[in-house]
Image (cartoon, rainbow, N blue to C red; front, top):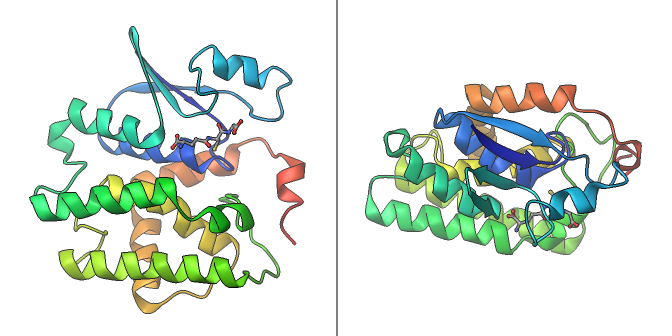
Length: 216
Ligand SMILES: N[C@@H](CCC(=O)N[C@@H](CS)C(=O)NCC(=O)O)C(=O)O
């Protein structure tokens, strides 16, 4: 049985991304939770699976795949019928491009608005740089929705949505004012069964008081 080595489903957005892809594709796996920064041996436990020292990691027999997007690609190859990438080549290229953009950018957004799926900030004011990054996310969403017609970025739920769903939860957690397209897209995400399943896991995840304290 495949094993997905993950951190908390409430606080670790990188863990959630391939979890969403694998679950949506109907690939059987079990979760292997390592309580990052809480378990005193968390680092050595992660290093047993990957020298990169980060989760998520997919263990499939003798193979181990680290990096969230690489695991999503692996899921797309394992379950072609799930159509985890758009069928149209141009849309697929765009879906891959914005997924890579998610992985390699948005550092301010990630630092200032750490993932905490179930929490709600009482007051939060993003910095100028965070506002620019939020605007870029809105642009990505609008352009993708226009090219596909929605309701998800490329029509049906794909890896691009797995990459951006955690961003939508951040906007909700921190009360970010949404553009009309972003609001419609977020609503489609909240109605998607696999996203709802993730939210249930996030609700049940053990609390990490230091992380919760980051929200005011
Ligand atoms: N680019 C990596 C990022 C993974 C990542 O940063 N994971 C965090 C948890 S959400 C982690 O393992 N942090 C431990 C550390 O940085 O030491 C991916 O996409 O998988």
